[in-house]
Image 1 (cartoon, rainbow, N blue to C red):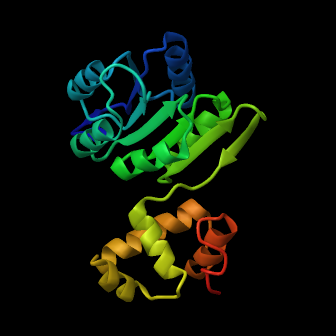
Image 2: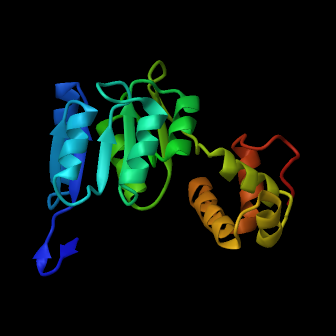
Image 3: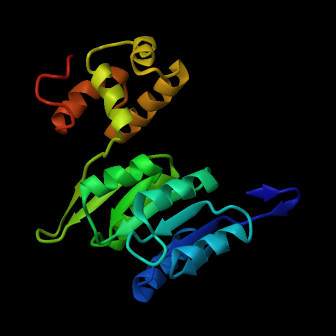
Length: 217
């Protein structure tokens, strides 16, 4: 990132009140992104103070249950104040419904603390490349479950896409602009990892995101 003729390092803020986890995550980020300035805070007010004291951060890594954090409302406020930053929640509360609420509020990623360091870093890299990511650890089985979590609006678009409706008709039915629908389709294709628009319906059905028989060829 450049400011005039000065090179400004990327800024990453790690906010978590568990010192060992926070330090380990910050160190992993410094190794992965050596040119970035990685800053730490043990509560949300301090994290926001750090963020406001210099160039806007590129990435926030946030615990879900720690001082100052109020779930979706905090995420929504941060999304408005830092529209260009990636907001990633890393938490022990590995609940897909909570993940859905946070993504709807403006988060870009939801990662379980039970994941391996490698898996967490892969999730961060995916968010930085533009994906919406939810990765949860099934601790009892020692396995990782990855399932795209859609916002209610994304689900509405997906449902209409599965009925083979063109973007203009979807825009009309949902009261959206054609440009907004096109953006939703692009996000859905990345999230469901398909290459063509007409693959979204069958892929969503295979993942259980649409009831059986709802997706048309």
